[in-house]
Image (cartoon, one colour):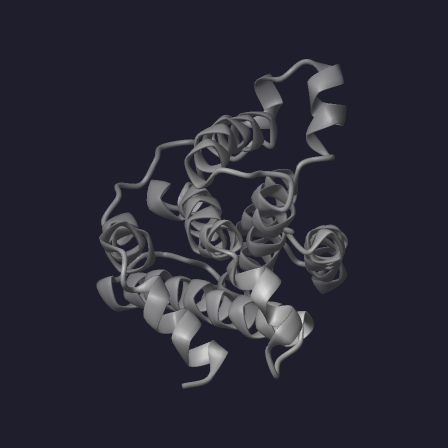
Length: 228
């Protein structure tokens, strides 16, 4: 069995992971619509939170490997650390993309007004890779799976509040609006607004480019540290 297939199998070996990967995306489909905000149904506005939690749940498996000494044993194994990490991250990324497909296709089937479903799927996919990269960088600094997850929960709360994903940025003071730009969730929220109102494709491409830039930066941080 390849590392890629094993990564996917291990991901479904935990019931909590199954909830984040399969159940919550389905639940989000049936969230009600808001009046003035958000412009998409609540489940689609807040789905980024599910992606962030799923990202840390999956990458925590790598932290388990470190605790068990698996990463150190790679030094004498016929596989490089890059192969081990790359195939695991590929598996996790595919699972998150699967999440995104479930909520977008499901929304279309139940008749939600998603405006531009294809671009919504592209946006969620970009944010999924960003979420995996941020979680990878985070666990590279941690030594305990439980503490890593608990502290990351606080960071997620900070991301979604200050990034404008849970509360509209219009009510924020000017300083917080400027700070919000630093959070990946800000760009997800901007992307969701574009899906509803956007006309200039270049704006959408810029939003996705920023998310991929975050993904690249945090992937490099997490990979260089090698979570030893």
